[in-house]
Image (cartoon, rainbow, N blue to C red; front, top):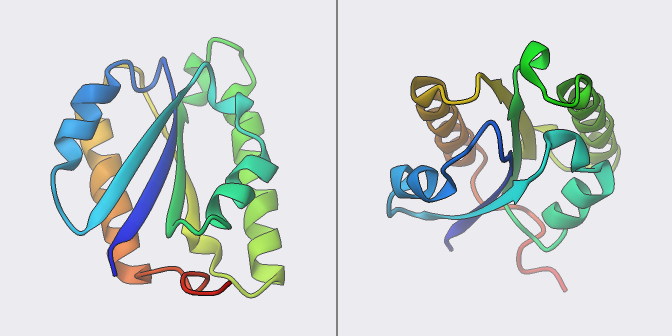
Length: 134
């Protein structure tokens, strides 16, 4: 069973989504990258709803807090991810199926590190336990 990862990415943090997708490469995990105007636009219910589709891992990439063009976007993101992870724990799903990273816009090395982190996480977690349930 192949795994699927959905990444919500701030347009400033990941300015070249096609390049990011190309770095993902071909492998066991399928990637869907969704560009957002700011990571603060990603709500907890969107992350949880995406995991319920079922997707194996949801990740949000935002800008470093001091570089967010909306000043508080990355801070809001962190709170929303923490809230959603708490909910996942309550329902018995691994909180690690939801993560986030903050990067300096244009930092290709940091984005490569994020990719490595996501791939390691999905490899550790494997397929979602929600898969195959009606």
